[in-house]
Image (cartoon, rainbow, N blue to C red; front, side, top):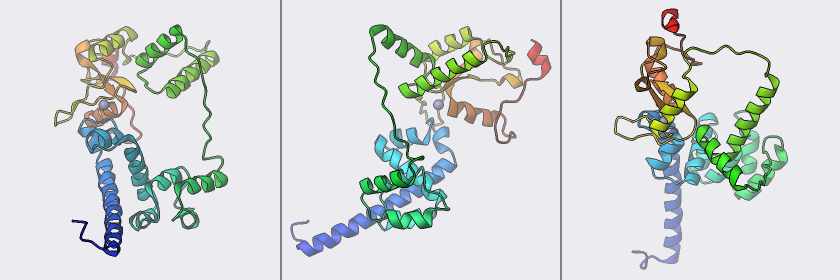
Length: 279
Ligand SMILES: [Zn+2]
């Protein structure tokens, strides 16, 4: 097919194919935005748009990250879309721009970024927004066997895969405990006892148990919460294992919105009637 093309035509057609690709990418971003707006990923059994892009659409992690950033940014700042379509702004540069680009600075910032390689874009942004483009520090720790084991246990118990996020949670809790050691916090009655929660976690294999209408089970193993299948506020038990299951935070919220559709943002679970609370 290509052998018969002269060099000039080959170059022209390559350029045209790339332009089509950019327009197609921009169209994908529109579809993703609508899928996200309808929260279809939740309904289908994925804990995030991120998981949906990887498992349902087959994107790599990097491709997913760039597309989600671009999708959300192009919804917020209208100047972004035409630049993506004419190829003067890449998805990688857009990802770099995401912490700093706003409606208010788009007209000033974008002309200075377009047509530049992403490394140059990174340099410009680091100079102009030193406080927002955080330099990440690397903490190196030598793990002995005991610490390794503790880390694995803590990851499971906290249902947190990311070491840095786990360390942050542990340190926050440590600091909070030190600050409030002498203050008494009354126990909420809808809370599931720690022992019961552990039984539910063991039974459900430390994974979200949500299954979408097409049979996809959410595989989220982080940010897990205990869900009352029949809500506590509607008389569901906090002690009966059959009424409890593990859900990720996103699906727990999704289910709560279905249980209480009239509830407005910000969403908090309604209090149980006193009659039920006394049981
Ligand atoms: Zn889930």
